[in-house]
Every structure is written in C-alpha cells, then in structure tokens.
Length: 418
Image (tube, rainbow, N blue to C red; front, top):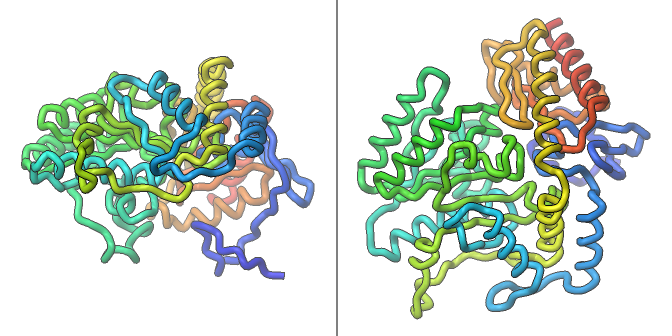
C-alpha cells in the first residue's frame, strides 16, 4: 500500500525508497528489513550524545508520569524553571532571560520579533534586518525572509519581507563582507544582524574563521545594531565548543538554540536575551508585552529531556568525546580529500564537508540525486546538499563506524564519476 505520509524535503515523484526505522541506539539506526545503519548526520543535526541515551530516556519517562503538558502563559512548572536557571548559568553573561519555543525556526522568529519590539518600544524607527548571503534560518515566514532567496523559498516570495544582505566572507574576500556590513549598519535603520556563527549549514556547510565573526560583532556593537546568533546547528558542541561564538570571544544580544538542546530527543528551542531587550518589553501596559507563544511552549516532557542533557554536559566527559571526534573527523577528511574529483575539503569542529566537482554545483546539482542513490545502497545515513557531502555524527560514534562512512562516501564519489 502506498503510504499517505508526505515527507519533508522529498520529491515523491522520484519514487525513491523510504526505509522504515524501528529503533535506534547510539550512532546506529535499525531498519525493518534487518539493517544496521550508521547515522552519520545525527538525524538532521539533532542527536548529540547518541540515540536513546539512557539518562534522557529515563527523564522523559519520569516526567511523562507526573505532568505531560501545561499552558505556559501565566503558569509555570519545575522542569522549565530549572532549565532556565541552568541555561543562564551555562551561557555567557549577560544572556539572562530565556524564552521557550518549539523549533529552530520558531526560535529565530522569536529573536526577530524581540529585536523589532526592542526598537519599537524605545520609539526608535529601526526596522531593517541584515542577513548573510547563503544563510538558512528555517522554513517559517520570518525565518525564510532572513535566509538566502532561491530554491528553498522562491515559491513563497510574495510572503517574504525585504532584508539587507552582506556577502559571505569567503577566503580572501573577508574585507568585502566587513565593509558591506559597516555600510548597512551605518544607514541608521538597521534593527539587527542575524548570523550562523562559523558554519552556514544548509547553504552548503560553508565555513569562515572566528576573527571575522568577532569583527562583525564589533561593527554591530559600534552602530548599536542588535546581533542575533543562530546557534541552532552550531550550538551544543558541533563546532568543537559549547557555542560557536565562544571561539570568537563574543556574546550576542540574542541567542537561538534548538536541536541539541534536548540531546536531539524531543523538539524544544530557546531564545536567550539580554536584560536590555527584556526591559524594553517590561511595562505596566499590556500592549507592550511580547506577543508570541505556541500551545506547547516549554512542554514539561521536553524540558525534562533538556535538563537531562544539561546534566550530561555537567557530569560526563562530553568535551573530551567531542575532542576525540574532532581528531577522528580530521583524519577522515584527510582520507576523503585524496579521492579523485573531490574539492574544497573543510572542517569546523565535529563537522566535515567536501564537494564533488561539478560545474553546476549547488543544492540542485545534477550529481545530488546520483550521490543520494549510491549512498542509499550503503548502510550509512548521509544526505548530500547537492554536490556537497558532509559528515556530522553523534559524539559517541566509534572508529569502526567512521570507517564504514568513509567506504560509503568513496564508493558514492566513484559511482558518480563513472
């Protein structure tokens, strides 16, 4: 029977096989047809410590038996209160206010609304959002508006608002980015600049160095333009540190986090804000409150999972596991970069990526379907971004599984070149 499910980012007209996964553990997925599949992309960049981590599973089960859901407008619960306190303690000052939402996209929507509300409540006419070329921040309307215009959102162009765009700081062209940002900030109407720190994910795993990130922060501060760091992908150790911003020695005005917040087990997101942004919305006038919520804001079960994740970070050698994976990924990248037809090998922390040479490269590269078809025959979950192959596994992955990933990529590259 044909499934009634409409899958995301899937062209059903291609009739590609869709495996049925029955369970998962650690870095592996187990399918209904008896295969063990290495999850080399953390199931869309979310799984950090590994699937079905016992501490997170236990926290979910315990909380489900006590309080499963609660309206969060005017009410609260212990898992959310504890999570907010511990997040503030874990994150850099002055990020001291935590607003809960459901996903990376909604955490970005929240940040954009907070930035615009900050200026509106101060009575200052700043309304323009600045973005970076090739960026991606999600699939809701505001998040699409601040992402790169192209195949992801062309159909929805009438819904999107205008933004100011600065070029990606490609190697050797960093100054052009900084000059463009300086000019955009100097215009006087810029409310905020939103950025993916160090790694642009869906844009092709593009990387740029910490000093450029630090200088962009300084430019925004000089012109009092709010700085929004979208760490939905880069947070929770993906770039080698808890936050990518750490490597540049900066603190944003607004910080978006999701994905690894619960270890990848349940959907939950937060937007952290400074006291100044909170104060701009604080009033005895109800019309100045922050108008945003969803039915599942700060769901107690999701918060319990996040609390377990924070405990793992505090009590287990997570940073050492990340450091070990960084070294293993570097060795894997060195091995893969020797393959014929491979270009631009790159790494940022636990993330490695490479391109398969294609004059028409990009998300709609003709090599993309061929790479996907070849990789589908392996027992490895990899999802190329057009002609870009990337590896972003859970931190618990072992060398044997990484060797299996290397074999699958080598075979896929060879297959498309032939």
